[in-house]
Image 1 (cartoon, helix red, strand yellow):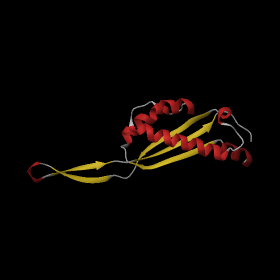
Image 2: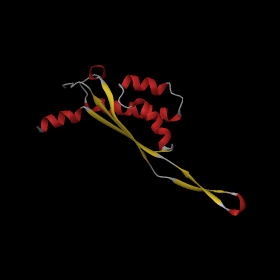
Image 3: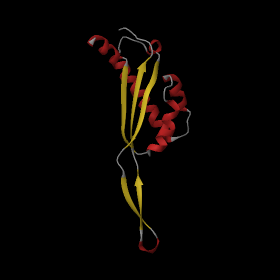
Image 4: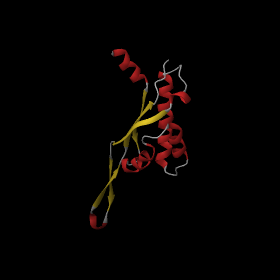
Length: 128
């Protein structure tokens, strides 16, 4: 049983992007486009999307693929049929700034950031 669990863990690869200076809402718009998609299709979607968040997610996806390759050195990506199992965008730290407003008041500006977690998994079990 422990051996089977170890094999299942080998099929997963995780990549994280912390404190990305984009609001989580903007990042989720792009993340929703690629959730559950095949890796090749997701890379094509991210490469030709005009949003800035797609550049960062593309780099993160390439990192997740590289992590999967490091775990499965004998297997090839073409045979593995990789797909994005999970992509999660959480709110990160918030920089709080004050902007002067009329009549001596001040408005608070919240510069948001986010944390993205991407999990890539293989569809078919590739035996090493």
